[in-house]
Image (tube, rainbow, N blue to C red):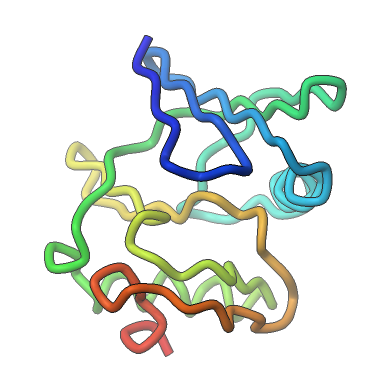
Length: 137
C-alpha cells in the first residue's frame, strides 16, 4: 500500500492497487465531494465505488498519476474544463496537483472535488507553479 498524505490537513489518501481511499477530517468537504460524485456522472472524473459516512471515506478508482504543470497539454485540459462548465460544474480548486494523467488512454482527470460548486468560487492564493486558472479561463 502506498501512503500519501498530500501535505493537506483535511484528508489522508491511501493508494492500493487500482483503488484510492480518501479519508476526510472535515464533514463539510466530505459531504460536498461525496454529493458531487453521487450527483454528476461526468467524463474524466474517477468512478466512486463506495463511501462510508461514519468514517468520512470515499473509495474510487485510481485513474492516473500527477503531472507537473509544465507537462500539461492545456488545449486538451481546457476542453475538459469547458465540458464541466457546460454542465454548470466548477471545480474551484484549479491547481496542477488536482489533475491526473493516464498514460495508457491519454486522458486527463480532475480529482479532489471537495470545493466544487455550480458557481466559480476559486479565489484562493496558489503558487504560480501550481495555479491553472489563467490557462483554463
